[in-house]
Each structure stands twice: as C-alpha cells, then as structure tokens.
Image 1: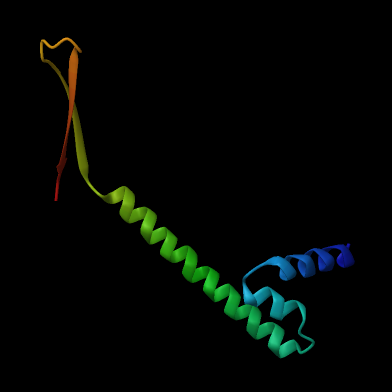
Image 2 (image 1 turned 90 degrees about the vertical axis):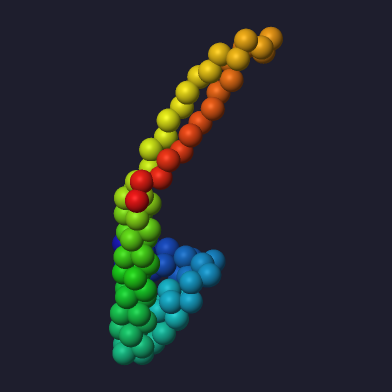
Length: 88
C-alpha cells in the first residue's frame, strides 16, 4: 500500500506545475522535507483564506434587481427593461 501511494505521489510530482511536491518527493533530507511540507501547508492555508474572503465579499454585496414588463403597442410585442439599484 505504501509503495502504491508513493508511486502516485511521484507521478503527481512529475506532471504538476507546483514546485513543492516535486521537491518533497525527490529530497532525501528529512529537514528539507519538513520545511517544504510546512511551506506548502502555509501557502494552501493562505490560498483558502483569500478564497474565503472573496466568496464572502461577493455574497455580502447588497444589490436589488427589479424587472418590469412594459407594453409598447409595437408589432413585436413586449419590451423588457431591467433596473439595477445598488444599496450602500
């Protein structure tokens, strides 16, 4: 089982563009392996924190959308207008 997971990690390190896993797979120094692991974990935490901020700011943006249908007595029929009002 350990050999199969090691092969999966080596294969992932070969085709990924992230430099961390490749350095972790091919290092023989335990200190270097731990430092790369800490660095990679810290960068993932920063990424997910920034993703959280972006998503919460997106859903916290207050806006009201009103759609009205107006009869214009034209041959084509109805005219659709959309008004977006921003609330600050």
